[in-house]
Image (cartoon, rainbow over all chains, first blue to last red):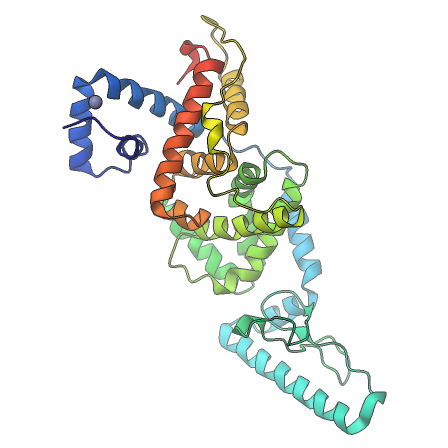
Length: 157
Length: 195
Ligand SMILES: [Zn+2]
């Protein structure tokens, strides 16, 4: 076998060389001091990097994150808790969609006196006020915007 | 727990968390918080906002979990989401760009000026601190490939997905990163202390 090139050397050091090839490469290392020195240098670097563990975050990191998540998605969380299964979520989505349509029709009939909140994005994400549909928003499913707030009694659902 | 069992457990937790199970999500956060934070440190560099960015990344992950199909390891997917959070943060600071491309490769030739300490046997902790400091001096892409390959043990393919770079690029970046770290360690660490 001829000397290993940089990429083959990297494959060998990182354990990404297939078995038969790596056996041949190891045999070559026994006979070639140049490749052996290169292999030793790169392996030392790899072992050093593998021995440097990530620095730990503060212990309360997870608790703070979970509190933040809970605060960011109160209504969505409620929907999830009430209707945890995906088909049920689709039902919730359809229900919310019909509410928006009803609200829009209601607004048309009652004129500007009824203030309708800006629509909210209803996805599994937290509630977010939607951009107007022409603001460069793509038409992918998860970016459909629909209100999930009950406009009739403002109950938060 | 071996690697494949750990991964299967993580994917199970991710599927549960995707249905809104906050307890499963909190377990995932415990497993991944230091690792994602380290990945962010690799890309952004030492910065007081990295902890906030880690929170941001987990929130993004939580919101995107329903779209996680489980056809790759959760870790690979989580690193890809986190990479986008870093991109967004850098864009806000006007530092967007090719941090995960070729930028910083010229650092390969730059090695520390510190004199080595021949014959001096350093403690494990001191050695680790020097290694960490030398890794910090590398470019973002070099830090990232070293972390994902050496610590996280991701395959080339998984690294390509996580970093959104071609597989061939992963190999050459990893080679350059190992060579760069090796050159720095030769100068910074007495031979007796190299593992
Ligand atoms: Zn050779």
